[in-house]
Amino acid sequence: MLGFIQGKLISRNSESLHCVVLAQGIGYEILVPKRTLERLSLAADLSLWLHTHVREDILALYGFESENEKLFFRLLLSVSGLGPKTALSLLSEFGADTLVELILGKRIGEISKAPGVGKKTAERLVMELSGKIEKLSWAKDNITSVAQSTPKLNSGLMQVREDLFSALTHLGYQPHLIKGAIDKVMVSEEKSFEGLLKLALKELSNRSLNSTRVNSEVGNG
Image 1 (tube, rainbow, N blue to C red):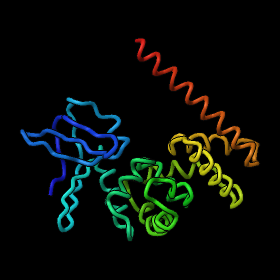
Image 2 (tube, one colour; image 1 turned 90 degrees about the vertical axis):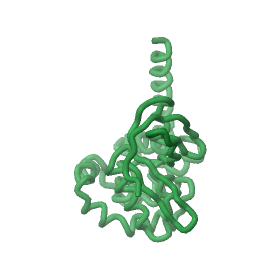
Image 3 (cartoon, one colour; image 1 turned 120 degrees about the vertical axis):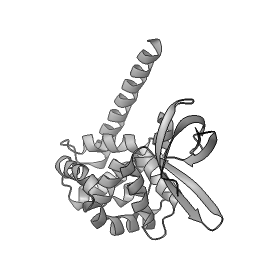
C-alpha cells in the first residue's frame, strides 16, 4: 500500500479531480479534493498523504494535504453505503473542518447539497459519525471552536438556515461561501426568511467584490 508521496506535479484535471505526480521517474495518477487541486501549481514540488483504494479490478490513489485529512477520508468511508467518490465529493465541497461542523450540527440539509450526496446519505453521515468525530483527538480543537462560535438555534431557526442554504445554492453560490454568509447573518436581529435572504445576498455580493478587488490588485502587482 502506498501511504505518502513526494514529487513534481506534471498534470492536473479540475473536472475529474485527477493529477499526475512524477516521483523517481514514475507518474502516479492521484485523485485529490477540488480545494487541494486548485492550490496546486504545475511543475511545483509537492507532497501528499495517500489512501490506496483496492476493490476487485480497481486500484486508485487518493491524495490529501495532511495525514489528518486522510484519516478523516477513511472515517467517511466507514459510513454504510458511502464510497470513495462520495467521500471525495464531500471534502471537495466543504473541506474537513466545515464538514466536521456540519456533521456535529446535524445540518443534514446543507450536507445533502454536495454532488452525489442525497438526504439519506447525509442522515447516515450524521447518525454514524457524530459520536466518532467527538472522540478524535485531532478534531478536538475544531470541535471546541465550533461549540464556541456556532450560535444555538432553535428548530425554527435551524429550518430557516437550511432554507437559506437551499435558496442560495439554487442561485449558483458555492457552499463554502454560503456557509460564511449565513453564519454572519444568523446573528443579526432579523429573523424572517425574506430578510435573512436579502442580508445573505448582500454579504455574498460584498465578498465577491472584495475578492475581485484583491485579484485585480494582485494581477496589477
